Amino acid sequence: MSAFRFFPRGPQGPAPRWPLAALALAVATLAGGLPVSTLPAQSSGQGNAAGAASVLSDTARSVRAGVDPLRGNVGALSALSAQARSQQDAFERNHRLGLRFYNGGADASCEVPLGRICYWNNNGDVPPPAERNDAKIEREQLLDLLARAQSADPKDDWVNGMRVRYAIEGQKPELAVEAARACGGTSWWCDALQGLALHNANLHREAQAAFERALSAMPAAQRCEWTDLTPWLDPSTHAAYKAMSCDARASYNTRVLRLAQPLWMLPGNDAASEWYARHTMSRIHSLGRIPYDLQWGDDLLESQLRYGWPMSWSVQNGGVADPRPPQVIGHEPTPSYDFMPVPAVIENPLAAKEESWEPKRRKARMRYATRYAAGYGELPHQFARFKRGDTTLVAGGFRLMRELEMGRAPYNAGLTLDALNGQTPVQVTKDDAGANRALLAPMTAPMLASLEVLAPTGKRAARVRAAVQPLPADTRLSDFLLLQRGDPSLTPSLERNAEQAYGSRDVVGGTQIGLYWEMYRPASPQAPLQVSVRATRLGASFMQRLGSSIGLSKALQPISIKYNDNGRPDGGAGRSLTLNFPSVPEGDYRLTLVVSGSGITDSTTQTIRVRSGR
Image (cartoon, rainbow, N blue to C red):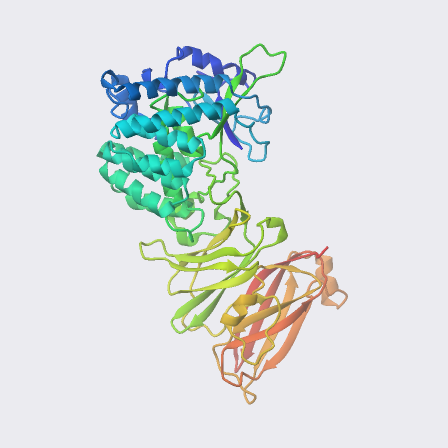
């Protein structure tokens, strides 16, 4: 899990490791035990990400002045509204005092110091302890009171926000949506609450529309702050990004959030909704007490914008001999991943490579745990291109191997091609896909391809993204697509063989594989074409190359086939054959297809990895 805890900082930077547990109740004592919303806001000082302070400015100014518009006029509250505020404060006091102990992160180092708190990513650590039953009961009682207060006065922005917050915290997504839709207060706030609740319920298209309404209705200065993506961006880009006006960075933000979207085949952009949901939930947290029991500040805002808000809480101590008070830890959902690409891809998406995304990157600028998939893996795949007149048909093959732990079929699969230029992407999906196949999508210009598989049963996902170029107009030979077996028919077709695509460039030695390719030049018995297929080991030593040159080793070139292509009876372009790939040392091999005739030679090459079947 990823987690937060209080982190003392001195004038020279982070304090030593040993005082981490000492600060939790100390900061609460400094807060005087008052609800965070009644305290004057103060800057957390050192360690904030660029842009975090400015994002908080509207809230900070309002709280300092004691006129927070979402909190309402505390001197003119109805009896139910006043009771709800008092009970919320009491609930959080009791909640913190009843937190269970957790030592799963006792040895965690501080990955990212953020003002008063410390963040670390321990996705692989033990889960936090279950919440106490009395806290669940008290939350239900608070929700009941908030429902009555909202019914009595739907314009109470504080009540509206708190009811959505505790419905989400109590894992009641339908109730959160109901509460958000019952909001009759400030227009932009009600829309933002709907976006938060709908996003939490995995209704991404509706959530995105609600957040767009909220952004349109909110004051311009606040919209500028909410659309400041600095916390998610690499520091190397901050200066240029900050130099843009709020209006000028709109198109840039669209590109960033599109590239950060985990699965393009799903409707709506849940990465964008997650960003605005974090803003909305943070704004709710700024209105009342939270289990940390300290005043709201820039460090808490930055932590929640970057890594999400906690959904469970615990306390940790330093051991029986440690006299210091327990330390509060907030645990946000796991597993969480970094879905941001490397900075170069944001500037030029059509230069993206498979390795341009590092979901498990250390010291990530952001992490996000999707609610529709509890894990992400790399997708074994293959891209191959074929001509259809002036159009290139991209075949995106995938293969779900046992180690991905995707759960049982069927799967939802999608291939999306996007030029990220404002034009409608090309998308092909299949909702009852098996463990391997290829999806076919047309393109006429360079595109970024995203091949994705979602397992509804296993709640896991896998994907790969890379830029794809169309074939040149004068192409005579397509790429080749690996198959589970060759097509023995006289008229092999891409559409038919896509259903039995091998779906990966990882080949098991000692097994059969098939190839499918297309020839865009004539061949006949009178004018045949010469075809050769060979596999050559990459990275071989000098002695291995020497042994191969004198015929002592077949390991360097385990496949070498030549034959004449007399053409198809119907003149079609499709070709296929079966290869018996021998058992050879594991490693990378260059698989090359060469077609020659009439003094013209064409070839296509892909690198495959041979692994042992044991």
